[in-house]
View 1 (spheres, one colour):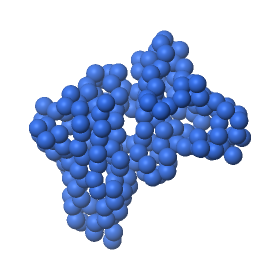
View 2 (cartoon, rainbow over the protein chains, first blue to last red):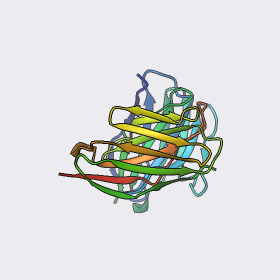
View 3 (cartoon, chains in turn red, cyan):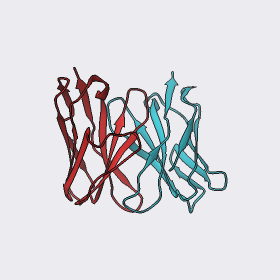
View 4 (cartoon, each protein chain N blue to C red):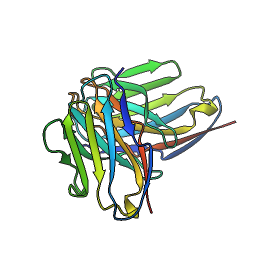
Length: 114
Length: 113
């Protein structure tokens, strides 16, 4: 149980274009979704926390106008990387809390901006 | 906010030996401490977790210890096998559904034959 489906798994886009990443909770309702970014050989860094029906909370240093998060339903949260640049190339992964203690992760999206 | 430090960054052991990875955290309100194994390009996989009301937890070859007073916790892997080679992350959070998980910096474990 408690599966989060993340798509796409890989995407290559041109500089200046936008890319949308989706995370769907398949068998539970995800009130809160966390979005992480992971550069090669580094840790998972929290970008933002999204709550269904309200604005996302962004971590310090993360541009909210560049990384648009929408959490319009209890089963879908999206991250849109706007005007992507090569330095945005990274592994993006979502996570939902599944009870008071546990977390479940999406399978991740490898974004390459060329 | 929470800050989690993890050591060592790389660890090489011989097959059959034990491996120990240590983490410290800063937020005394943190009460949930999971450990994840991540293979390249994959999602983190939970291998063991501990809550602050216990000091030690064991699952076969894997154990975790927690010292709340000192705010540090450790992962112990015994009888290491080549398939244990991966990156391991510790993490910390406050219990309660909407609370974020803060990760340590990661340890690249290599088990050599």
